[in-house]
Amino acid sequence: MDNRLRDVFFQLVRIGLWNKESLVLDTPLSEADWLQIRAFAIHHTVEGLIYDSFSFLEEQQLPSKSLRLKWTVRVDQIERRNAKMNEVIATQYTAFTKQGLRPILQKGQGVAACYEIPHHRMSGDIDWYFEEKGYAKAREILKEKQLNFQDTAGFSLFYEWQGIAIEHHKRLFHIRNPFQYRYLRQLERKYFQQQQEIIINGIPIKTLAPELQLLQVNVHIFKHLLSFGIGLRQLCDSARLYHTVSTQVDSQALKEIYMHTGILGWTHLLHIILVKHLGLPEESVPFPYPEKWDADWMMDEIFYSGNFGYHDERYKDSSFSPLSARPAGAHRIWSNMKRYFKYAPQEVFFYPFVQLYSKVLGIDND
Image (cartoon, rainbow, N blue to C red):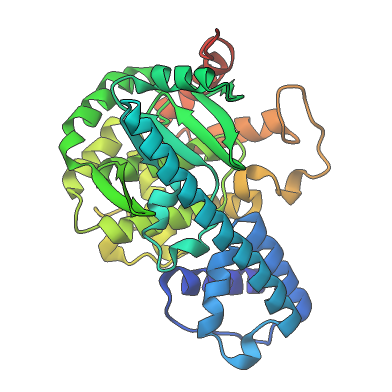
């Protein structure tokens, strides 16, 4: 995608993300341009957001009627999937709590509630965390019900239920530095009373306190940037979450959390991108970032890698290895570790060790 079309793409994302502004074009968009925009929207799972921008475009700026029809069908599928996701969340949450568990909904549909049109956010899977060491009990319940689940790397397990991907997580945050685990448990206890609820299909569902939800969403982004990349949808999640909770968070406390966990430098880069490229109002950023820092290189990496690095054209002809599900896997991870070491050295240093441990020794065995 050339720079002209890339600028248009980001304009459309911002219009759909904030439901305002108008599209500025130097030259009209051709059908080929729109097809390329649609392909990148799918790669970054923001096709719902760009669809929402159509209401703010002039008639001559819109894609062809046939392409709009295809886009409408796609968005209808997103809406149906979100409805199904919400149904499963409400059912599972009720079932878990009846079993004496205390589930917390992570990311996903909890963040979707921050969007102007929540049911147009492309959903992934459902992520659950269980308080008071409830992970092991939830795992036993799955075994008793003979659900076919798989223990996975990252101290998690995975299964499908009613056609929806579900993950249970043993750890609340994807912080890789093991010396931070005690501090993270202290944070969980400290912010217990500030947990929030969202209503999904009439059921109050527990979510984290705003400070911890921001930490969780942003650390998740960073974890994937250290491996194969992440799509714009997750950055849009961060932007909408900041905008929604900006008046609720303790800015100094949040900055200290980022500093203590060793990711403050990287968080500054993220904030720059959210403001410059995704249109997050500066007043929604909880604390100032260095004005002279350049984060365009990080935006370039995110833009070309796409959702979890599956669509990175730069590596389409590279070879696979037994250790990676992506082409040029080792090279990509090593390159990313070098890029981000300056901004989060402890996280980068411990990343490969904890990844290896979680794949080999950290997986539960019956």
